[in-house]
Amino acid sequence: MLFTQDLPRDIRMRSKRRGPRMNSRVPVTIEWRGTGGPLRFEAGFTRVVNNYGCLLVSPREIGVRERVRVTNLATRETANGVVVWKGTQRSDGWDLGVELLTADLNFWGVEL
Image (cartoon, rainbow, N blue to C red; front, top):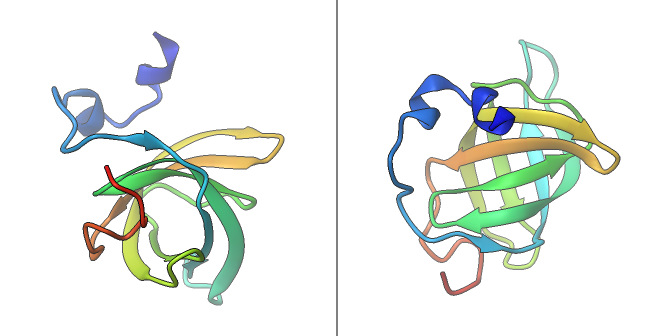
């Protein structure tokens, strides 16, 4: 499967996910600094969520290992995260795998 070849080795080698996933479109804002530049803000949304992260769609390309701050606009909760995977650009934005570092287990406001 070509998709798995695009993932970082540590993610490809994981045998199980840490929790259940749910397809869910949650509106978010994304904050990140980039490579020493100014703080950037963008509106995005999720495709898939779980207690530990999400598949996020961003209108801007954000690099792997970039630290981000994600705000769930439905709950107004904010969490720090890191981009662990960058997919391809689609018509609606870049697919990004984000691992949440400081999120509450109820961050997404859905029962997983």
